[in-house]
Length: 450
Image (cartoon, rainbow, N blue to C red; front, side, top):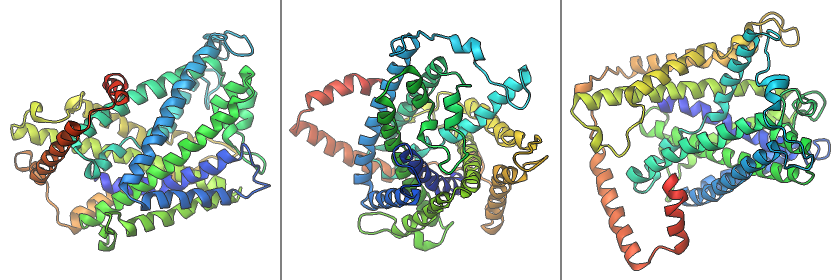
């Protein structure tokens, strides 16, 4: 089920990131000078070539890009803390001033009330889903990772700590140095005019400008450009691999299961790349509104992906318990266990059903009493998801599997063999070549944390 809902999500989100790439470049080059389609074409060709050169090149490239991300976000955390304490050029210790005026929560739909603040919180919560999509990418790389029993659990823990430190802490500090009603922030996010919103809409860029720092906005936007390019690169990879996985399982045309001599699914990559051409819709300003619908689609498909993952985990744990497989033999066990998945499943379903609540609110600037166009794109994924599951069950005559009879061991012997071979080669390599001093330091510091 995960693969079925995951494929449309990443096929659509890739052109969205290519569009964001062109929007960031607007910070330096106005679209009136150079058409944004030029930047979309350049970035598209680049990510297709990177994905075509195979997993080794892709992994090395993403490793260095991820390293840059970590350094930049840590620098942003330190900078935000310095600005909050009054260490910027404006010498203004802001502290928690903006939590009092204009306040920590803005009102939405209902002005200046607890209801309005709650609706604002819920609107941000459902919108933030789009930003957090993609952490399931770790699971897709299992098939091509060396020694997955050791590498994948570490990658999962790394993802959790990154979200906790990089996202939560950084957003917390951002709320201290920038009020939500800042005129420059609102102007940067305005879609009026030919140019539309650009990278200047980043609240971190606005916060740096407010503090009076002259050089950093351009540097930060350069980093954002790298981040967006990396996201587009990863999304194209996972879109092609999920399509390949569907074909291997017999749920998509067999041609997409074909690979070249390096193991790259070239036909699946080709089809996924074709969908990236949707990014050229944003060459026209009028198409920007249309492209927002794709963001709605990505969000709902992302939620459905996680619903599938959580349901799969619940059934997997039930099967393990029924067959007497203890947690001690598992390379990784979810900290929340089966009840953590039940709670998360409830939250995902709640968000899926109520994410489009504001489309029912009358707004003359959109479509009158009911914003039906955004409503359709926000919820169309749910009936499609159910139709695919029911249709698959009916067409394939698939029957339910009891926990006592679930197959937990197919493919295990092959993984055991590959793991033993890898560990033997790794032992020989470490015997012949001692670990570098830098590698030892990394292992005992950052590596130990993550």
